[in-house]
Image (cartoon, rainbow, N blue to C red; front, side):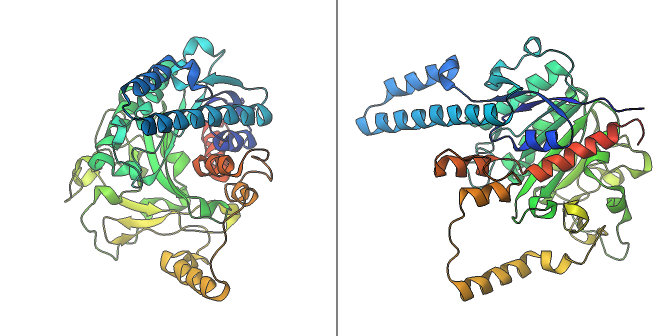
Length: 394
C-alpha cells in the first residue's frame, strides 16, 4: 500500500527553510505566504500613512519612510527568491489573504513560524499583543478554517516565557479549541547536522489522538525511561522545553495510553507539582545526542533533578555541554584572534541550504533571510516523522 503525498501550505515562508525541508522529505508545497508587497495590504498602507501624518519632525518622517521602503524591498526580494526556488507553488501576499476558497484541494499540513520579535527575550516582550507577533491570531484563523490534519508551528524559546507563560497558553488553548491534540519540543540545530547552536520551539498538532508526540519524541528516548535514582524537584514553567497536551483538557492520558506525557497545565503553575498532580510531569529537555545522521536524542530533567536517559549515541555528550563548547571557543579565540564575520555562503550552509541559495541579493538581505529562516535539516526531520506517523505501513 502506498502513502499519498501530503499537500502543504507554508505561512511566513521567508527564505523557504520549512518548504525546502518538507520538499526534501517528499511533501508537496501547494502554496507559500509572506509579506511580499505591503502596498497591497490596505491595513498596512493605511497605518503607514497615518504614522506619517502624525509625525511632527522631519527626522521621524524620514525614519518612517526609510523603514517602510526597506520592508517593501525585502518583501520583493523574498518573492523573487521564492519564484526562483519554488516556481510551481502558489504565492499569497500576507497571511490575511490566506483563505480556504483560494486554495484548491485538500491541505494536509499547515506550517510556519509566526514573527518572533515580540516574544523573543531580545525583543520588546510585548507578546502576542505586539505589532508583529499578533499575527499568530491570523495563523489560528487559518488553522480553524482549513482544519488540516497536521499543524507545525515554530518560534523562539522565549515564546515559552512570554507574558509569564500566558502567551504560550493562549496558543495551545487555541489549538485545543480547534480540536487539535498537540506536543511541543525545543530542538537545537546543532544536533541535525549543521555547525550552529540554534534552539527553537516546535509545536506539532494533529486532529488524531496521540500523533503529535509520535512525531516529536522518539520511542528510544521517551521521557518515561527516566532514571529512578534522582529526586524530582519543583517545576518551573519558564524552564519547560518539551510537552504533550490534550484536546480540551489539562490532564488525562494525552491520547497515548501509558506512554503519554501530560503537560497541558504546567504553564499555568508557579511551582510545586506543576499544577497537574500525579498526571502532570514537568520537563526541561533539549536534544543532546549526536550521531545517526543528525537525528536528535532526548536529554533533560524532570523538574530540577531526575535526568532522562539519552538515546542513540552518547559519545558527544561531554563535548555537547555548553561549558565545554565555550571553553573551546575561548581557546580558539586566544590562538587565532577575533572570529571574522561569516559570509552569506557560510550562512546558507549553517542553515542547511544549498550553496548560493540567497545569491544575488545584498549581503544585509542575505543575512536577514538566513537569520529569520528555519533550519532546513530540522524541518526535514519533522516532515519525515510526520510521514512516518501517517504511513499506513508504520
